[in-house]
Amino acid sequence: MKDILTSPFVEEMKKTTANMYRLGWDERNGGNISYMLDENQVKEYLDLDKVIRTIPTGFDATDLIGKIFIVTGTGKYFKNVESDPETNLGIIRIAKDGTTAELLWGYKDNSKFTSELPAHLMSHMARLKVDPENRVIMHTHPTHTLAMNYVHELDEKKLTHTLWEMCTECIVVFPDGVGVLPWMLCGTNEIGEATAKKMEEFRLVVWGMHGIYGAGKTMDETFGLIETIEKAAQIYMLTAHLPRINTIKDEEMVELAEFFGVNYRKDFLNI
Ligand code: 2HA
Ligand code: ZN
Image (cartoon, rainbow, N blue to C red):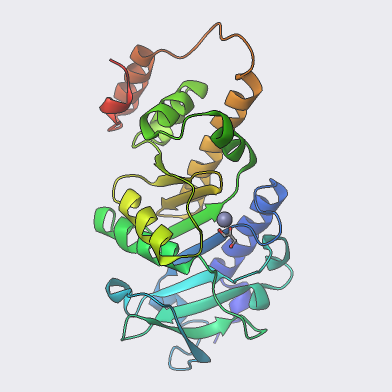
C-alpha cells in the first residue's frame, strides 16, 4: 500500500486550500471543498474494506452510493490543511443506505465533514446529471465577489452581464453565467437543495452576501472559474464609483463567444 500523504489527491487538496487561504478567500473556517475520487486510484493507498467509523449525513444521496470523496472537515481552517491533512481532511464513501458516510481516512481528531456537505453532495448529484465528468465542488468567500454583493443587484442576468463586461475572457470562461441565491441560512439541507437546483443550469452559484459555489471536472477548472469571477468583481469594485467611459459592448461579447465557439446565455445579453 502506498503512503496516502503522497497521493495526488491529498497533494491537490493541500495546494488548493493553501492557495485559496493565501488569496484571502478562506478566513478562519470559511470555505470547503469536496472532490470525487476514482476508486481504483484510492485503493492503491487505502484498504477500502476498512471503515474507521460511520457518520450519518442527514439527507439522501442515493445517486452517490459507493462514491468516494475527499472533503474538508467541519470547523477546520484552510490555513492548516497543508501542515496536517489527516486532521483537516477526510475520505468518505457513501454507504449503501445513501444516508451514511463511511470514513475511510482522516478527521483524525474524531471530527467530521464540512457542515455544508448537503450543498456539496446535492450539487455533485445535480452536476453529474448534466456533466458526467464533474468531480469537484468548491465553496469559498472571495473578497471582491462578496463586496460586489452589497452594491450590485443580486439578479442572475444583471450580475452575469456586469461580470462579463469586466474582463474580455469572462463570457468565454463562464458562458453559462452565474446563478444567484438570496441570503439564506447556511449549513442546511434547504440551501443545499436550492444550490443543487441552480447547479442544473450553472457551474457557478453565488450565495448572496456569503460566498460562491463552483463546480468542475478538475480542481484547476473549478478554481479557475471562481478566480475569473473574482478578478471581474475586483475590477468592478475598483471602478464602480468612477465615471464609466468605456465598456465591452454586447456585440463584442457575441463576437468573442462566436470566435471561441462557446454556447452562451443569449438571454443574459441586451440584444
Ligand atoms: O464551512 O464557509 O458556509 C464554513 C463555511 C460555511
Ligand atoms: Zn461559507
